[in-house]
Image 1: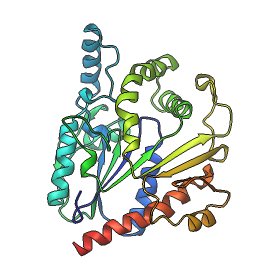
Image 2 (image 1 turned 135 degrees about the vertical axis):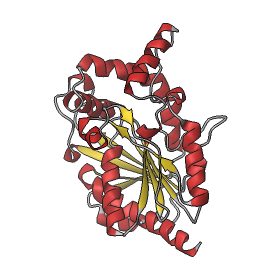
Image 3 (image 1 turned 60 degrees about the horizontal axis):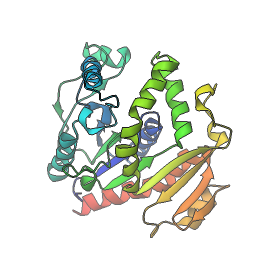
Image 4 (image 1 turned 180 degrees about the vertical axis):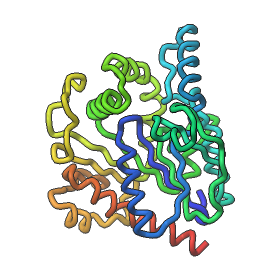
Length: 290
């Protein structure tokens, strides 16, 4: 952690909706005139798309059928921790991009599924913003979470997460239903062992819960809308959180526990702004005073 060079991390698994939260941060940074260096979690994968397929094949031949991007072996997590540490100390670090599709790859004249070259961030950024799978990762040898000043978890309940992933991967990426289900099953041990524990280390979690039947996510024809959902917001430390204000602004919400409230799903964007803007401004003020 660094008062002078703060780091914000949004963590959540593939299909969880972290990209939506990232868009909220884009609005927040623009409105508050905050210049942020951005790290996308996919850029710290160990392998590009072709090499990952080869690594998965090799793992299967060794009898390891659960090799996935959720686990540490497929990611550069020591490098991620070192990157956060360097930014906290100097205000700069090296970053790169993972090019998901032809539209992202075209400006770089590269193939989709590849990485751009490493490049140094600007010297005058206000904070570092990370969005990806491992912002709160901790193991016996690697501690990413210790370097982060504000940790945010985005955690739809598992059936909703699967529905979102199925629809995204089929409609946007052109995968078959069978291929997406195979990915879900292969990732499950890593999800349990490496993704879930991170949400006990976050400062605030946003968990979307549908209010329609998602008991069989594999036959769902559409993703439950915001109006068909509730969002559970849990604070690790509720001290300093103005719950009466939040309840008055998020109409239809109520407290479920001393550190948690439940709000209509359609209010999630507003909740993100109301809750996270003061936290971001506090980090900015600490940087100014440091």
